[in-house]
Image 1 (cartoon, one colour):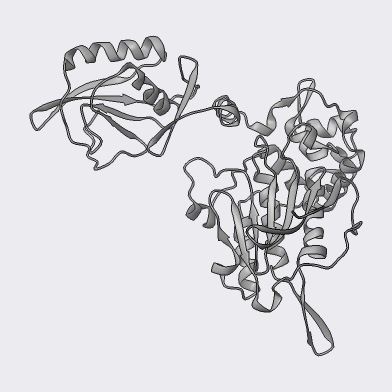
Image 2 (image 1 turned 90 degrees about the vertical axis):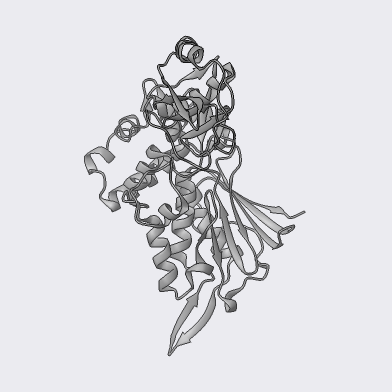
Length: 401
């Protein structure tokens, strides 16, 4: 192990002035993340202050870590400016490591205790699984929406991304081919994609759309529920018929409709939000429409070690919900090349809308679309009612408070 020359703590380095047994939480966090170095005998500015009884620590620390965490660490003694400090090197472990039954994870310069949905995702990932691939006790194939399965077959047949021989098989066999069955259970992805009421199992599995005059002045809102393919199609229909107004112009005898947001870009943004949402979180996807902009907020997170800059550049496809994404791919609604964001930005450029106004990323997961000056949207006067193209699921209007 080599000495680390840094002026501040960061993802892989932590400093402590003296040793305390509870600092094994930090070792646990490094082991569950990408590994790192814990140095004993440095203050929070990185200055060596020395450590008492360093020789004893060289024996105690490895033994305590082995007995409590069940892992091996490198413990070495160094000297700087005539003062000794102890360096503990921690490797990244493929299996989950706990400290007295609690799981910690190093993120940035913080050590976080994992709970709830975050702990669920962490344990699944450490075992090579994803959240949407986990089995879901309760629903059966008979509980799924026959109409949703029929529509998927039609979309997949048109996209030619599944052979007809597979599409003609019974529902059980089709779901197995889509990897939506785990033993005797359907997976969470199966319920999201084909159950008529996925909200019964996942509280936030719906979209909420609202019109705001200001951040605090909500005029009206709609909620869209049902299987995820329905949610995407219906949300776009609701936005076009109720929340957005096209600017109409003419080129000769041809009528031209210019939407405040380029429709291909809006489609990609809604698809991105639905496919990559963290459905373990109880909050729904929220689409907020203002007179001069549209915001999409998606409860989710970027892949580990990704930045917004990487998201906006050329990147591989790493879906948050791989099994959900696979169904959308087979249906021909998305690709599997990580090009969705690129197509979104291209649509904004083709519409001659400045990218800074059209698609600005909102960390961690969201999009903001600015409107053309001549297509700003006043509150729609359209009366709520049944919208064209509705096949299943539900959409209902709520009065703003």
